[in-house]
Image (cartoon, rainbow, N blue to C red; front, side, top):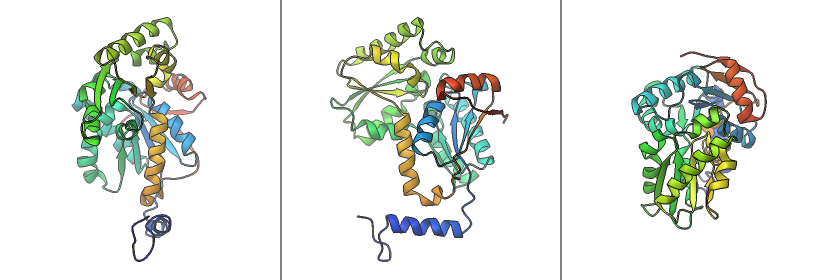
Length: 301
């Protein structure tokens, strides 16, 4: 039951009233939802978000010229991510999704707690780690979960800390760095024989940490393109948790709970793509991630 507010339910009717108020008050300066990644992996998140929420407009920005972020320091990842967020804001985005685990791990909290107050406290930046952590509690039975990610994500311990906080230390985490997985994907070798060696190697190293791991988070948005190989070598009975659908559902829930933000997200079903790298290279890689041809613009910031 919704909380009573002047005698009315705070659910459906109140949200409707909120939407009407924000429209009338001039805050409905609608723009696309920004989706940012250091490279191409965030396209796997965007694909799921588009499928779940096709009515919205999206602006995808890949900082491919400076990728990968996974091996960079906290300070550099924060600096680069903040530049990207500010650029997306300048393009009219009121809500930005960091569709990158490294950026979510190393930059999101600082941007949320400090930079938004300076830039515009009415705008929002969300990440991919918390929605995944919220889901994992309903997946694991042994309370032992593995995390496969870039060195930056694993070393940040962002998943470990978020899981420990959310589940009061009842779920144990085991992280495994997979430094070769992103290069395999971006060199279009995810289906090659060489990928088998590195996929099996890192999965074996993870499972050697704890033989009762029953759930594994793919903590990098590139990793769904290695899913066939991962499922080939993951032990029977271990659930592989992908982020795309989880993040998409979390975003849908967020917009439903925040009509003041939903009304500021334009809804024409238009998707635009930008890259800091070579446009033709991005188009070629994006076709592999999205399964479709796209138009791309080059940007610098």
